[in-house]
Each structure stands twice: as C-alpha cells, then as structure tokens.
Image 1 (cartoon, rainbow, N blue to C red):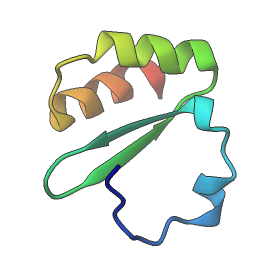
Image 2: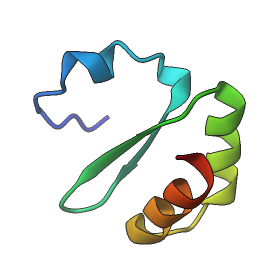
Image 3: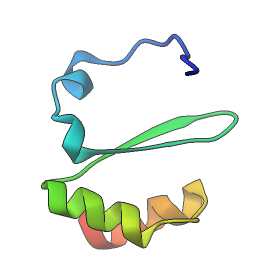
Length: 64
C-alpha cells in the first residue's frame, strides 16, 4: 500500500465512498463525486483507460 499524506476537506470525507471515483497521476489526485452508486460504477466503466483530461470532459458532459 502507498499512502500520500495530504489535507482532504471534511466535506469530501463526509461523502459516501461509493459515490466517489478517484484518479491519480504523477502530479495530481482527482475525486469525482457522483449522485448514485450506479452513476459511479457507470462512470468508472465508461472511462477505463482515459487520461485525466478525457475523464474530466466525460464527467462534465454526462454527469454535471
């Protein structure tokens, strides 16, 4: 296991983990929050293999 110490805002911690999709690269960690577990699972399936920018555009187009 690899842990990176950081400050996570409490409002993010309070969100059910099953509603969060997490992505990381060498220089960032992104957390997308979705409305339902089904949305989160569909988002993960739809964005497999996408880079951060592609995944961000997909989220904005279909989930915002």
